[in-house]
Image: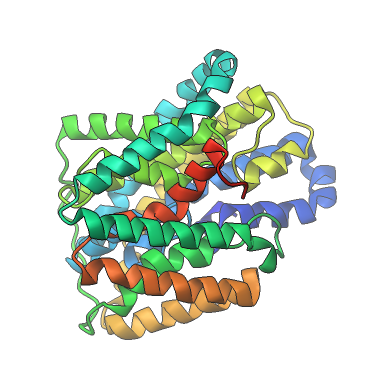
Length: 390
């Protein structure tokens, strides 16, 4: 299930969790509640590995890979897509090793500190956003992009009840992030043939790997534990540490590690605080929970399988060779438009159009699309500071 959700643009592991729950009576009778819980968590972990493939080769993000799609797809257009996918797989694999002990530490140490952590998150994110803006080459344009995308995010979440919700949960992240980081990139792409791909090894120094995985693990832990945050916020935290434009390989490694650690720490938050951080955790909360150690073991096994599958499928770019990039992009955009309509209806299509219009602005004014993450950061800041209820 995690492989399917990871490979199909626009389909999230939350969707797969909803499908599993819809047949939970049959599944519980055959594999038991512990088996169903293990399947849900395994799907989430596997998804964090496989979602790098459509982000890299097709240039379409899901909510977990919104910022990663830009450096990864850029490497693909240079013929280095397989390297980008393998870097992402390496980051997620190392995150499994780090994420299990981190989730146990969070479970044991953080619950007493929770009131202080909840209060300080909005201030921390405000400081990060302000630092990014004032250090940009064009601070006024960076602020404008951040503010406009943030207002679009506030509008999207505030009126998300207008969207269709066939699988429960919020249905606006797909069109919001696909428009800001996917469609806006694909519309400006060249019409050249899809470049031939080559793999020349992973070009990241050994020390760079360790430091970047630790950075991703810290960001993933913050997002996995604190309420109201998402993997997209973790991507923004990683980008704020630098290297987003200058060191795309290191950024991909950190962001992938953050997404996988987020899943493990989110599980710890469920067991320690009874708080849910994503659709899979919501689904788990409705079940009879097995011991946390059982799900950590299931996640470890799924991580091994996800890594092997990702490495195997990293060579799949040969399928697209000979196709025109523009023709391929049109097909991908058509698919995502259909999925947006099915998952969120006419309101989702409106958000997709507005987000695409905003996402086209940064390259026109020579500002990194990083600042379009205001669509996620500004609503979270407002929610954390109690300025606006979403």
